Image (cartoon, rainbow, N blue to C red; front, side, top):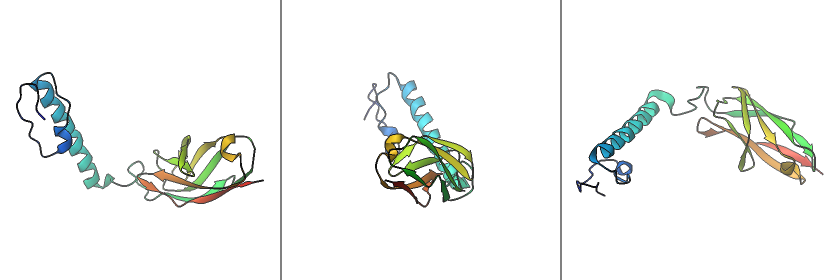
Length: 145
């Protein structure tokens, strides 16, 4: 790919070479410098020990308790409290394979909004927390008939 003045783009990073053509050389240079700095900062962060659970540094998330741990099928929406450890401010509660609106309370507690549609039918759902780039263990939430 070349910029408007047809000077070839040379970079060791393929992502930097795929920028859209810029109006002039100054724009193209600044965009590549910005992306290069972003890449360098990202790589330095991982090398400095921020690669795992960078939001609070407490390690792997672990779920120890769901409250409530069950509900009646066809019931009303409710707030699920998930207790454990290693939760960061980036925590997301997964209800099966989809996330639910999550509130970070502390490194040991997060809450999630569970809708009436989520508990419409009897069965069970695996609940886990994703935080700091890692998934916790899953616990079973039971929906009784």
